[in-house]
Image (tube, rainbow, N blue to C red):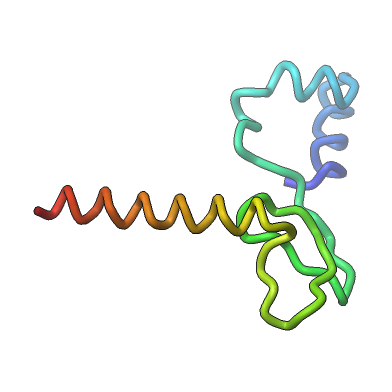
Length: 85
């Protein structure tokens, strides 16, 4: 959901953006505004932050995101292996 859309809905209800988000927080949980990327930017696989890659292979905005994503992946694989066995 984009910020502009939330603003339109807030105006329709006669609320400010902040009031609308506060009242409808249960609906909006987990939804982040759609980020518009410039042609040279990418979105980080883990946190979604926009960044400019210095190589065609970059998928993460920083080392901490890369390490955390790989740890989560490894834990998921271990959990699946335990559940199957």
